[in-house]
Amino acid sequence: FGSRVCDGAPPFPIAPRPSTFRHTLPSGGQHAGEMAYGPLCQCAFMSYGPRIQQKAPPLDIVKVIWEKRAKFEPPMGVEAPPPGQFMLLAFDLHEAKADPSTATRSMPLDDRCVIFGSSQFHDGQVHDGHKSVQEQHTALFFMKGKWHLKGINGNTYMESMTAHPWLRDAEGAVPKRYTSSNARKTEAIAPMDPKKRLSREMCVFRLGDSDRRFWIAGPLPLKEGEMEEAGADAGRSAAVGGAAGVAGADRRDRGGERDRGDRKERGRKDRKEARSRTRSRSRSRGERRRK
Image 1: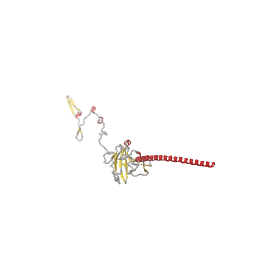
Image 2: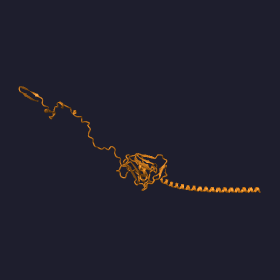
Image 3: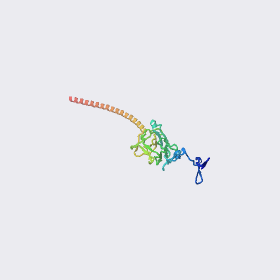
Image 4: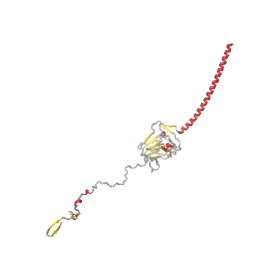
């Protein structure tokens, strides 16, 4: 404490100024704590909120929640098909309905396995860019002399060729058509389903909800109950044969009319001869009676 001395007055204690107050700690250190008066007498939490649970700035981190599926590998026992016997054809429905002969695109099936999907980064894959088609959607492979379809990451639908009258082969000709007594003309294949065998009738398939159709032309095996129906070539031959038959029928009809005319003429002659004979007989009988 300091003191102030006045003339004729005893000294008295005076409180130190707040800025000069120092508090001595027991350890000997000092801490410069200043006394606060008036508006400065506030707690720390009154000036700003607590810093606990404050949001940190967003982190620019890409997290992979779903792992990418591994690339599809053909199953054991897959073999290469006979060269030059099978053809893969594709067409879009709106183009095929407008002009079937020019809407078909084709490629030979010489590989043992062909993968269909929307990815453009897998080598040798048949592309279908519809939004419902997965990167690797369906696999087509040749095993034990037959073609099979196996779903990979999406649904696939096998369809009967009778549902597509605008099918054309690589040369633009109408192929032979096969049908069966089975009323089910569409069959769905899910990724967890086993492989499905293609046949002469069930040789068309599509990926997801895509408008594009794929079909296989070649000596596919016949399933039970499948049979060949009259195609365009058979229809043309039937039409030619029908025209020839009509011409032959006309000739037969004309010949029959001539025959009927000849028979009528012969019948008239025979009736005339019979009348003349009966008249001659009646005359001879009358002459005998007179005598």
